[in-house]
Length: 258
Image (tube, rainbow, N blue to C red; front, side, top):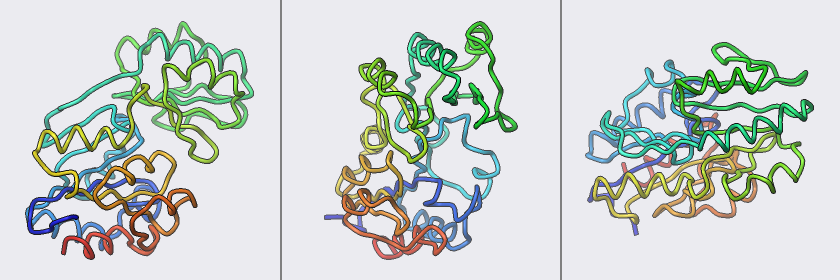
């Protein structure tokens, strides 16, 4: 059972959890995070986005104790990198070669520095994403970056998933899959952080809404689902808070820590 008199850690998804709209964090959420940290608790972002796919304008809105990016692929605590694992380049190129041969599907490669898009008529690169037109171009771009996440359209054939299932973990996110190196997930990211800080697992809270949040919601001492979460996420949670447009993050933090 969580003991709020001891140091606890809160892990927050970004999209449709912390934010009420695209990259905007309600003031209520910011204030609740600030108050929790003032009481000595730690607050972390735990996102499926790669490090390079977290907008600067989101980071600038508030302070946290660290960030877990890429569903456990990259962890920073107090501005120090404590864990980093990229998707092997061979796996990235194998996935990209398949998409280049099946242009009815799109793919986004999320890196530590930038994001690269294998476009089609349904999906175009949006600034600052970089459109990639060939394997040769991709190989050149990867010389200066590390891919942490692959996002691929959910309409991709089963053979694509079967071919890469030994190398990647697939998280269904509705119209796309989030993919990271096999064995990683948001729960493994939490484990990395609390082991480094000496925080008990039972003194953790995880709050999320999407398919890649279910592992951390099940792992945490208290798993919280947003009211706007997918049905199977609601079923896995210990507690359901209000939606992202109703400052559900603030209300959960207040209930359990403040």
